[in-house]
Length: 296
Image 1 (cartoon, helix red, strand yellow):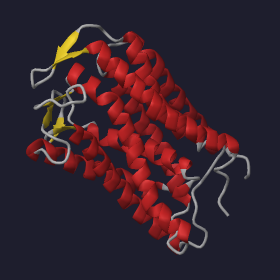
Image 2 (cartoon, one colour):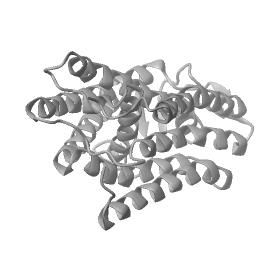
Image 3 (tube, helix red, strand yellow):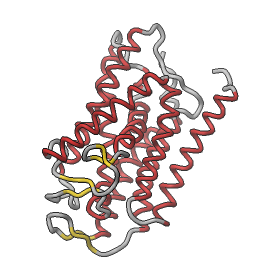
């Protein structure tokens, strides 16, 4: 691979700055700021990172396709669930400027977090996003396996934060409560379904492009595989910092059930460590071992 030019170096530096900022926000901001601000700030930082990294990796047309698909699909199902209860459950958002019933920042957050989850899952499957060629057995398998795994990776994050965001911080309200510290299990099934839908659409579009191309593949530069995995790991590290900075006491959900704040934060941290952080470490190990070398 030839050395990057001045523009390439500037882009790489910008990406690393955003990754460093994400890790800093995850580790430090929860210790200084209460509420949902640390997680929201971290997820909003993922949006410009995904935009820059995605444009470099897929080109601006396919990057915009990923953004449009994730934004439209997530906003449609969020609004549908608020109105009907399907697929997440009965809930509503509090405050913020909304697009219909959903805060305007939710769509970009789905995109940013979705991009991190997509590439983390791709790394676990040995750069599967570059091997979606329908003419090959591996490509056909990856076209369906990658979206399924990416959706699970993204849902892991939600399992580790939703009870804090809703039950404790009231960013949204589950109107009938739920068994996971005030959150219904349908929320997590809905997250997997909705994210799987937009990942699957993007995989099919990318597979079509790679099948038609003579030499399909993504633009890969030193560190470009590492960056999204580290950023994804930051979303799990935030749950650790939030545990150490959490307030004690109790909180009551919309169904009138009393929950212990310490138990919520300890459980969310444990989930984050043994899902988000563990998956990220596995992806980092694959990168370090060279399992993600350029496919033949």
